[in-house]
Image (cartoon, rainbow, N blue to C red):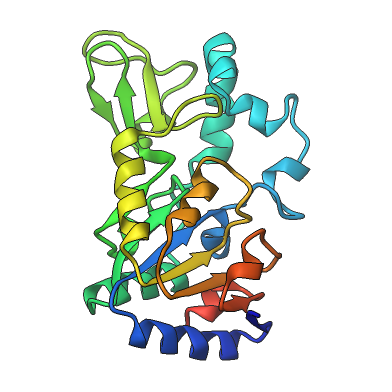
Amino acid sequence: MARTTTSPKEAAAELARLFGSARRAVFFGGAGVSTASGIPDFRSADGLYHQRFRYPPETMLSHGFFVSHTEEFYDFYRERMVCLSARPNQAHAKLAQLEREGRLAAVVTQNIDGLHQAAGSRVVHELHGSVHRNVCQRCGQTYSAEWVLATTGVPRCEKCGGLVKPDVVLYEEQLDERVLLASVRAISEADLLVIGGTSLVVYPAAGLVDYFRGSSVAIVNRDSTPADSRADLVCACDIAAAFDF
């Protein structure tokens, strides 16, 4: 049976112990990792799915909507999906430190905000892409998030006039096979898997935890997840506070 704690201090002590004894740890994270940085998640009480828009967020972030309502997609994308003022929080910083110390092999993230890299993490598998990469669909020219935010309407390539699309995986699109395989490899080779800030309900990303064959699983998430029953440690508390060790 999993050991459960709601105390951030106790969670931090337990996580420090697990990372201290692991030989190859991997962190698998979702939107909850970045909420302390001011980026809203999707499913919590204050998340995007509980806010009122003309269309449901999952519709506006779908491939079909991107094709049929391109300008409206970019209006929503600029306003809600790109937050360049956000800064890494304690969880991002600690994970980068653990990597530098040789105690964390990789971060597998569902987030598209680039905050793990901003904190200093180097081995980051971005399952859903990144707002910091935007690619012309005609010539392949890449543009920054800052460039996209400075445009209006549908962004067009400065070289060829082609449509510039964010390098993010929309609903109805497949994950990048190379990133997917690298994530599976990292998780399957780990002896400690720490799952944080994710409800584990978005597939196929959530299914990656099933590839773990190591000895210890820890979950840090305020709400319960489908994987709680298989975890050795469940920390039902703020993730930034839990990584303050």
